[in-house]
Amino acid sequence: MKKFISIVLVLCVVMMMFVACKKEEEEVSTSVSASEDTSVAPSGSTYAKEYSIGCIYSEITGDFWGIVYNGCMQALEELEVYGISGYCIAPANSSDYTLQMELIDTATLKGVDGITLSPSNADSIGAYVTDNFGDKDDMYPIVVIDRSLNTESKWLVSQVMADTWTMGQEVGKYAVEATGGEGKYVLYGISPLNVNWANRSTGAMDYIEKNAPDMVNAYPEEDGIWWGSQTTSELTFQFVQDICTTNPDDVIVFCTSTEAGTNTVVAATGELGARKDGAELYIVGYDFSMTGYGYLVDGLMYAAVGQNPYLMGYNSTYELLNYLETGEIEEFVYVPYCVVTLDNMETEEVQEYFESMQMDI
Image (cartoon, rainbow, N blue to C red; front, side, top):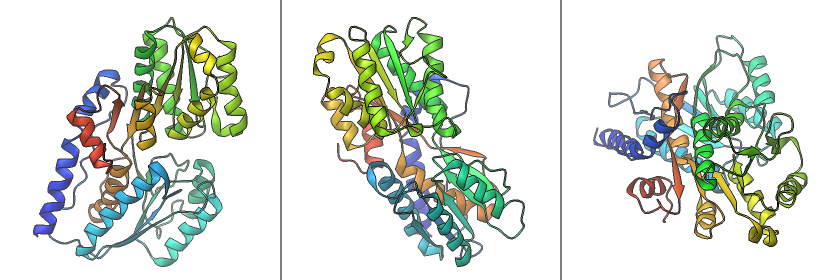
């Protein structure tokens, strides 16, 4: 019983830590609710049965997914005392959706009661779930994390992720702040085929268009967003440099939607020392890690709008278990985010954000 009470208290404290960071979110947009996650263990000392959980991610290493994995494993470790078993696994290659399908098949053979899933590909894995789960009565619930899953299957019961539209609005807000609402902006997105991913860029565009009408989109072709996953990394690198060299005297701000995107912009613009002397250049990044910390300290990034990968892994595990126990879950369970700048790193809320991700800053 003492173990159970401590788990609930830890969850409550963690969620309270993010109240301050969420205040800014409410100021930016109310178009999508981004209420804090309230995931807690059921109000009893035991669960109705000894559930088995499979957590199948696209990857479990790296700055972001390594922390998601840590959060998941912490939750599974806490749940062992109740007889709950579980594991967390991913393909060796994060884009290998075929192997991820095999991992889901394996979970079925193991007889899991439910899975949390970060799909490698929204369409391919979505089609797989539609074909193999559909409206069958003998499958198990799926809680998707971080990314959208394109399926109408009744077994997709919830999505645990950051409110990426509102986060995109934050990116737009800091892009306007950095430039004073003037100059040009570039939206470096992931893919328009995944709503979760697309919202990171469209949310930023929406904010800039409404609040800084004098700012000009430096890439007005098609829908005004450079979709990185639909081209090669070499072409994207060249695209970033071409934007800079064809606008040598303009203030430019790059709005990225992944930390990998931020890395690309930093690398590409780093080769353009003359451009930096000619005009101001800013980067507003998405997600945060020790790499992003270095960018802020070195003056390479203006701000980072960071998801909380630890809570994503931790809360999604509990949310799935609570659904198995109660049959109830919200369609969207939002994980808090936090904006990090060079000026606010010493504030209590940002320090608590770092601590929750086990970052010693």
